[in-house]
Each structure stands twice: as C-alpha cells, then as structure tokens.
Image (cartoon, rainbow, N blue to C red; front, side):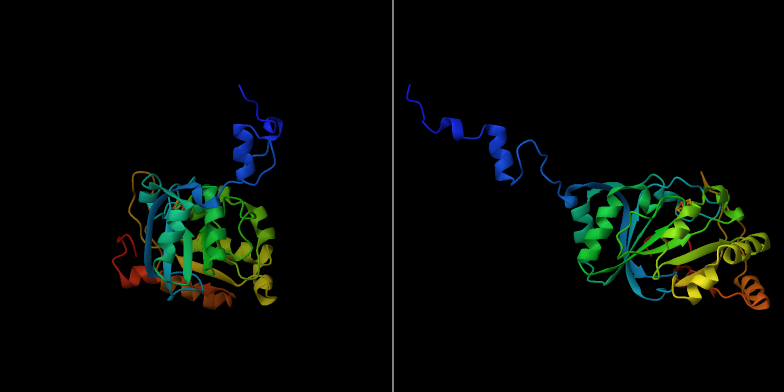
Length: 265
Ligand code: SF4
C-alpha cells in the first residue's frame, strides 16, 4: 500500500475540524451566542406603559419564569407558559418590528442566563434596551448599555425579603428604581428606603435617572398569587405632595389605554 509521505503532518479528523473552526487543538470552539435557547412567553409591539420611557412605542420580550410571587402580579401566565426559541430567533423577531426601543420583561427576565446574550445582541443592533427586573437577582452581569428598571419590593408585595440590596451599588445613571405601592404602609416604607439609601440624592447628582412610585392596580387572586385590592392613584399623589417627596408618580398607561386584563399590550 502506498504511504503518503506527508501523513504525519496531516491533522486527524477531530484536529481537522478544530483547524477549520480556527481554534487551537484541544480548545472548544467559541459558542455562537445566537444559538442559545430561551423560553419565551410572548413578543409584541405596544406602547411603553411605565418608567420615564412611558408613551413610547416599544417591543416587549416577555421571558417565561419568575422565582417570586408578588401579590399584585398581573403576569401569572408567564410563570410557566412559553416556547423554546433561540436567542437569534428572538433578536430577529424584535428587529422585525423596526422599533428602536425594546424591553426585556417577564416573569423575571434575568432568571434565564441567555437573557444576557439577548440584551447584548440587541444593544449591538443599535436598539435602546430596557430591562424590567424584580430586584431579587444580580443585575451586575447586564450589558453596560442596557437600562435597568429595578423594582424594590414593598412589604405589600409579599416578597420584601427577596430584595437584593447589593444591586443598589450597581445602579448606573440611566437606570430607574421603582416601588409598587399597595397601601400607606408601603408608601412609608418606600419613603424610608429612599431616605436611608440616598436615592433622591443619586437622582439629583445624576447617578440615577428616576425614582418611580406606582400605585398597585387591583388584582384578583390567582392560582399562585394572593391578589390585592389596589391603591387609588389620587391617594398616592396626595401623600407624595404632602411630603414634598422627590419622586415620579407613574400610572400604568397600557392599563388605561387597553383592558387591564388584556395580554400582548
Ligand atoms: S417579580 Fe413579582 S410582579 Fe414581577 S413577574 Fe415576578 S411575581 Fe410577577
């Protein structure tokens, strides 16, 4: 049998694949971030209803799953419902709406590690990326270009003990902090946190974009959430004015525009 004189220089089958992929022998090829899998509840185009971005057209990517069970949660359907989708497919769906603003929400979007790839690729595509997060998970791995809307869970949420206070040290000038207020006790708690943690000073000095106080919308009990009677926006407005509290009152605009129980808006 003829022997190829260059046989000893030819890579083995696996070596040939590694060489073709441009990697050193023995090293794993770099994973394509578009190929990772997410569980997605829904992707839709609507009007942003909250934060300082309220009123702007926005694409929402609602990821499945949340480790919390807030009393006032209006997205219980996102705890478990959803379909597998690659990060690349999600990016392409978002870009298909031709909208410069996108929000990752949930559920708790940061509970899925591929959410960090998704936000990075959306930022790379030139979109403004908002991340609505419960405040219970570490926000520090977020892309530096992403804007975090960080909930601080009030006692009335039933999940106050889950607040990850270390997140406050990671806040950036474009980020916003939100309190959903169910009653007067929640309001006083939020007022105390704002003072103790120096949040109003952070806004004044340009280290935080806004502090949002949102009256809880009435929510019926579900299978996994307790429900809440809600709080009149007027009551919250009067407390804020009486205290000269340096915050921004927000009412969920999408619930005023559409039926409050409607999905996909
Ligand atoms: S953090 Fe609370 S309000 Fe948000 S999805 Fe989870 S349970 Fe619902």
